[in-house]
Image (cartoon, rainbow, N blue to C red):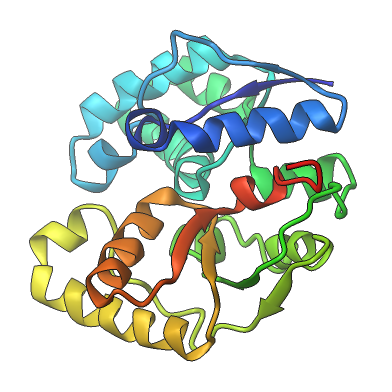
Length: 241
């Protein structure tokens, strides 16, 4: 199958390794991965902060670049924006062409694509570490990915998966929320980090690097030795490494 990778601007700027991991993983499973160089931001930050006209412009660009192709992204929050916000943006802008284009999109978060589209749980990964999983708010509440990431992680050879207490609680990032409500955001991530450390995990993983950045910053200040990794990076690991 040919798939097109939407890497998300946050990953493109700060975490290029995540995009490489997705590509390596999908190619290992026998699929062709294309990266449209014309891609830019999906418009999530514009949409959530009230710049709906600008968000609609980015939505038009996104639909023009990706069209009706199968699109995979390592960002649950961006996948949720495309699927949930684009139809609303089209209605708000009175743009039937955008509404039609948005309806034709097939955008999947990575774990959704692997489990639901490819029907794969064991991707041949090897990662000999103790891992806990943080379900980010967008993956949990907007996309409702459920236990798909956990099923993938349980199939990784050598990996010990441990439950995260209060996993459904927000880490406190929330994009602009962390900047506008800094004190509350810090209190929320302090709770999250306490729960992570209680698991004695070596690694905490998630489907959004934005949340992992917030959690990782707090963990680094405690010098607790817990690493943060995107789900794709774990799934891309093999015994040959």
